[in-house]
Length: 354
Image 1 (cartoon, rainbow, N blue to C red):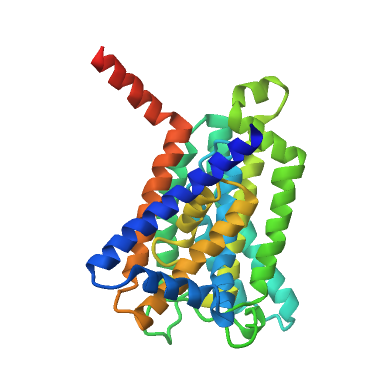
Image 2: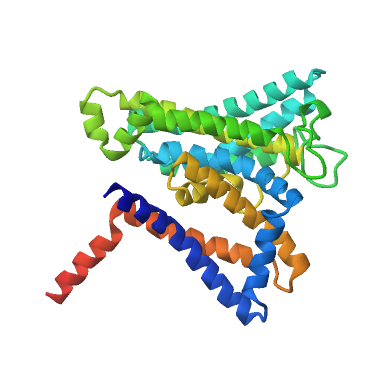
């Protein structure tokens, strides 16, 4: 019975991916190219090539952390939609520390930048956490609103107070060499990936083996029962939101120190590393191992997209189409699992027939 349940979960995870790739294949055929050739380039250049695979791991690093940041709250039915804002807040001020603090020690500088990112993410997450825990304010609405507010505040700071006057576009000064993660050879991989991997191991232990992990599951399944059994759910909500914010802030700091090196208005890309984390958490079914695999898979799509432009006649935007279809199917699946939409629709249909 347990094996059947696991098999069903795996099947439900892969169906949206397979459907997205199937629809993508139809679009590629209509465009006059061979889907097998296009997908072959996609995976060969990002997975089965040493440089490409290293770059894939590099881009997966922040997404592992944003995926975990989403998962630890969603498992407790706390919808922290502010991971994007928390990530940007952490990235911005870790960049400011890296650019302005006169610290010669590379190790000390890197530790300070990462800690700055974590603290900023936690500060951002604390506001909706307190509102949810003590006033029962919907954290989804608060975090979504704060995302927009944070983006505007950082836009103002990077275009005025902390603007790099020598640059031709809006950005902060480049961080010092001591704050940068050094690349390993002729690729983009840095020590940040191994930091993300270490945090993944810690989060796996927390979510799978610790008391807090069991409490997260209990709160997610039945918060009233958890409260009645003596669990301080208010305290747990705040702790989970703080952990989530710290993970998002570290993701931003690490991406700043290993890839961007300055804050610009396009720092997180589109739709953004925080939103990518949400897709990855859904794809990985909020499991740490699932999130690790989903992060690498999603990074394969991002890394391989540029190669599609180079080696085929299909534009790389086909990957954006595939990602959008996956998001649609995963969102429908998520809401159906949470709210039983298909069951409700089925009941209404039967009532109409009667």
